[in-house]
Amino acid sequence: MIAKRGRASYTGDRAIGHVDPGARAIEVWLGAIHEVNDVQGSNQHQLQE
Image 1 (cartoon, rainbow, N blue to C red):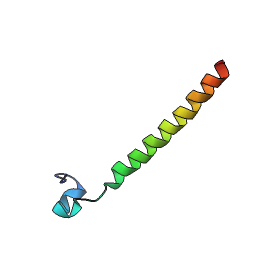
Image 2: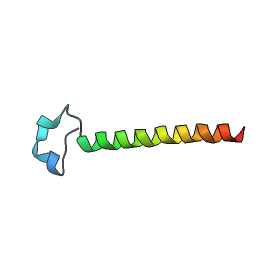
Image 3: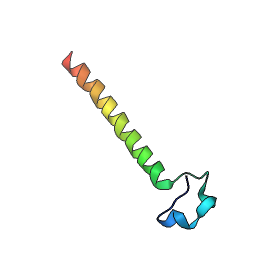
């Protein structure tokens, strides 16, 4: 995807094939939140039994 706005727009075609650092950071954060929720959810299930 070619950036049309923001700082990445200055790089044009040179940005193709490179991971957007901000998007990668969000992916890591959401993955961590998902893992924590999975662990807490399994703990809640064990407490109810």
